[in-house]
Length: 130
Image (tube, rainbow, N blue to C red; front, side, top):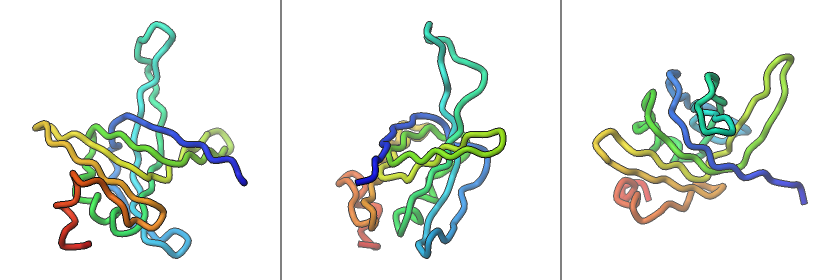
């Protein structure tokens, strides 16, 4: 069995608009988010860590309307790290996404590998799609 790294990232969506893509023949939505780094005293460091987040299937399509630049977001999923010439790339295959709107609106979307599961709190958003 191959090792899997699971990560939870809390941060803010980047300025770039999310994109619909085909990855390995599957529909996906890809977006970026930044997570602050802190030193041992809890002080915020100047450069955040950037993550590329991918959610597959129809839940990726549903989440598109909620992805807005700067929005606070928590994602949970499988972490894949790769290195370029001078950069390290952090990619998260999102299994769970939760964000809190400015008015206290809270939304959580969960998907298994096939995009068929989600929590009851989000059920009403997908009744027409289920």
